[in-house]
Each structure stands twice: as structure tokens, then as C-alpha cells.
Length: 102
Image (cartoon, rainbow, N blue to C red; front, side, top):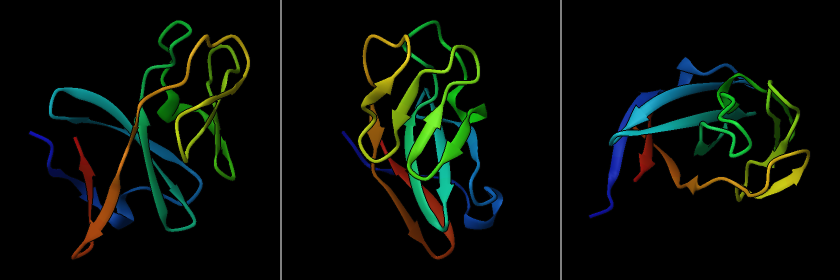
């Protein structure tokens, strides 16, 4: 059954960056886009690159391994060698805590 899981404090992820978290057995990358948090699967579908370590520009993250790009609003692939997009998760802030729905 899906539910929200606390993963971090809102200030733990600097603006314009991402961090990897394990949430309910899943490796999820959470990004801070000017105080708006987005969450996607951390592994790039191409060969598993860590998306949490990628470059973020606006709502787009670029995989650090082979430059595949993904839309952080819906997980879709925008370019590069990735054959598919990634799962996207709902994020909310409750009492200063980042929570992800899994």
C-alpha cells in the first residue's frame, strides 16, 4: 500500500542539487529546484548511472555517465542514450520534512 515516507529535512538538499535516498527498498533521487522538490528513480535506464549526481538545469537532470537527460516533473527521457524514462514520485513537505510517496 502506497504511503508517504520521511526521507530528510528540507534544508538537507541544496538548491539546484540532488541526493540519493533509499525509500521502501527503492533508490530514489530527490532534487531541490528552488525549494520545489522532485523525486525520480536514481538509476539511469541506460546503464544505471546515478542521476542524483547529475547536473541540474531547471527541471532537467543530465546523467553524469553518458549524458541522457530527464524531465524532473514527470520522469520522461528528453535525450541521449536512455531508451526509456524513469519512475517519478510525489513529494511533499510536512513540518520541514521531505516526504516521498512510495
